[in-house]
Structures are given as C-alpha cells and as structure tokens.
Amino acid sequence: MGGMRIAVLRVHCPTLNPSEFLERWELEAACVWNAGDIERGKPLATSGFTLDVADAQSDDELIASITDFLSANSAALERLFKLEASLVLDIGLTVGGNDQFTASTTLEPTVLAMLSTVGISLKVSSYPSSD
Image (cartoon, rainbow, N blue to C red; front, side, top):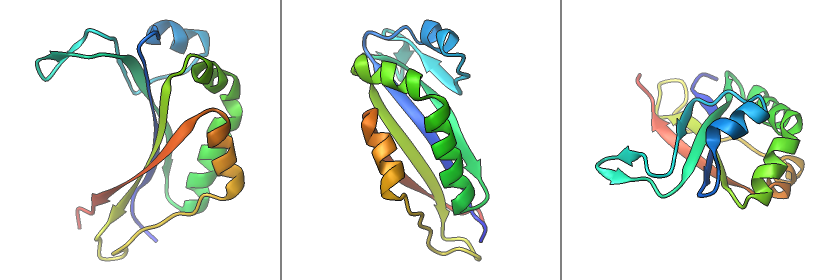
C-alpha cells in the first residue's frame, strides 16, 4: 500500500542547550531552536529540536525504524527524561489517496513500553494525500 509513513521526535525543554546535547549524543536534528528565539513575533518559552526517526514505505518498516531508533538512542532519551523534557513521537500518515483512503498502523505493547520507559508521548497525525 502506498502513502506516507513518517515518525518525528519533538523535544522541548526549558533547561536544555540543544546544540550541546545533540553534539554530546551525536544526534543530527532536523530543526533546532532556543528559548527566546522569536517565532511568529513572540519569544519561545523552551528550547528544543526535532529528530527524523522514520520515513518508511510500509508499516513493518515504520515500526522497525522506530524500535531501532529507541534502542540505538536509549541513553540519550533517558537523559532527556531525567531533564524532564517533553518528548513526543509524532507518527504521520497520509489519508485520502486513490490507493489508500484510510491509514492505520499498530504499535505493539513492547514498542509502547519502550516509549513509556523514557516518557515519550505518542501522537498520530494525518495528512491529506496529494492524489
């Protein structure tokens, strides 16, 4: 089945220096911001970054990419948890296409437990297909 299956980790923390954290843990962020940066005319209250976790062609590939990411980065994620960072894994799926009118994916209890252990919330977002 076609359609987009992506996962992005969004991290927000008022006490975090994103650049130092990313360098220390050898992570490559898609986007980085600092508390006080101006966005839409207002200063941001927290610092943070986003990490691309998955860009998959299938549900199996999506789940494998997520579990691989969680396993490979467990120490960094535990550190963010101890810093009381807000961590959200946002899974994006396309809907409404000719070949995929609806979309779903299943995260097994083991994957949900991996997320929960380091305080990661789960968000699922749908995006209209460009068909």
